[in-house]
Length: 259
Ligand SMILES: NC(=O)c1ccc[n+]([C@@H]2O[C@H](COP(=O)([O-])OP(=O)(O)OC[C@H]3O[C@@H](n4cnc5c(N)ncnc54)[C@H](OP(=O)(O)O)[C@@H]3O)[C@@H](O)[C@H]2O)c1
Image (cartoon, rainbow, N blue to C red; front, side):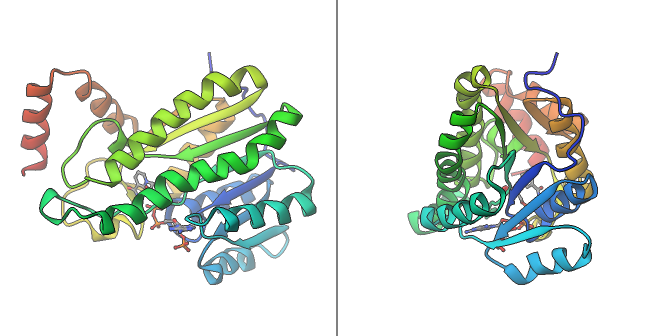
């Protein structure tokens, strides 16, 4: 029994994808276009967004420059979209910064931009879109978090906590929004091949392509899932690890990650 209302078709649905200039967000943009959605794509690098738009000359695609670390920038995009579309059916927040960080390198200067984009970005977006969705009693909000938020993992001193915050944010939003007919999608990918993971110098178990990740997200939303996680072999193993007692959890993670 899905926790959200299933969606039979995205044809004509107005979908705003934030963080669509590369990786998972760009792949989601293409997947939603191919499903017939009317999409708006946002990020800072508009040249990359325009590359996506030019691949689909027969689709109506809005390109909106947006810096999610600046709430005013989110508001400006939103206002423009509402003027053009009237309403937004689904907001998919994909933007994120991934910087490996260990205790020896930990400083606030390094942590703050990660928190600004990964935590304050989705919160500012939700604060912007919610009033109208609540007024209409209709809409959907998807936030791409990460399995790195399930429990503490090595080298993720700011990224991990930012994603843990978004898992909790989605869970908490769900209580209030489900009775109001607003769908909430908590999206936790494992390793996905993107420019962000290209810098990883370690073996990434269960690595999938960004096109595969986009299909998991799109199909999960269609099925009405709240907890969209993939690839299942890897994410189920991590879900199991987090119920273990800490001595065993730390021992196993150290053993697998070899730190
Ligand atoms: N790849 C993985 O293995 C993996 C696993 C779990 C979760 N995730 C999550 O998936 C999401 C996408 O990651 P990715 O791997 O696809 O990385 P990516 O290719 O580096 O894409 C990151 C996206 O975030 C946008 N972004 C960054 N800072 C921004 C800002 N200040 N304002 C607006 N947009 C901003 C980028 O756009 P601009 O630079 O053009 O602004 C880009 O579109 C992230 O939230 C990441 O944490 C990824």
